[in-house]
Amino acid sequence: MANKLAIVTGASSGIGLELAKLAAGEGYDLIVASDTPQVDAGAGLKETGASVQSIEADLATEQGVRQLLDLVGERQVDVLVANAGHGLGGAFLDQSPQEWRHVVDTNVTGTLLLIQPVAKKMVQRGEGKVLIVGSIAGHLAGSFQAVYNGTKAFIDSFAAALNNELKDTGVTVTCLKPGATETEFFERAGMEDTKVGQAKKDDAADVAKTGWEAMKDGKESVVYGLKNKAQVWASGILPEAATAAMHRQQAEPGSGSN
Image (cartoon, helix red, strand yellow):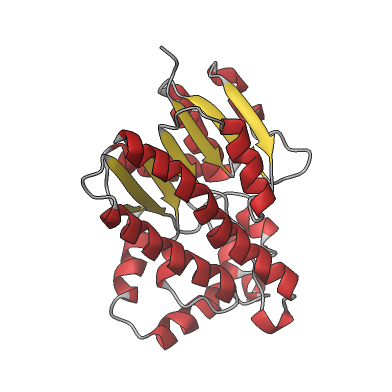
């Protein structure tokens, strides 16, 4: 019998790479995707001994999603890890439409374009697991990260709704909600000079392990770490103006030097 197959997007580094390693360690064959030119998303997985196919595709575009789906072909997908995401710091009025649209297209549109056809086939056969990487940012009004936090609010909500829609189908949808994690995110988002960009962050391997285990257990969502759980709890009782002010302290350009 062929090994089970897992797709992991955004797998060249950080949480995505760690999730791919966990899948490989449990015997899954892998299809891993990255949108970073000249970066082999499978490079960090070669020592696992798993069968790994790697693809460079911009999952912010329909063409990029189609490239990935074409590589999958008619193979049965047992696990889909929708981790690809794009951050963008700075003031919204200073961002070009091209920049913020890429965040929306990567985090929202491309994610949905990938999940829908894969989840349909899972439901048809009555089994499968989807792990979507959201964020605690989805619970916070994100001053100086306004578009990113907005996309994560959508993803956090969407994951919970889809999980409910698929109740009793044999398919589960789990949302992993990390906080600030030691990855390339802050560099790529242009946030290295911010307070959060310079602060100590969670370990990507620990975050990935929490999400992977929650997915295996069929949980609706999981927040990594007590500090992050406290922020999510506080966001439920504080007005959005308060969370926006708190977020400003962490994400305003130049705040890291204050």
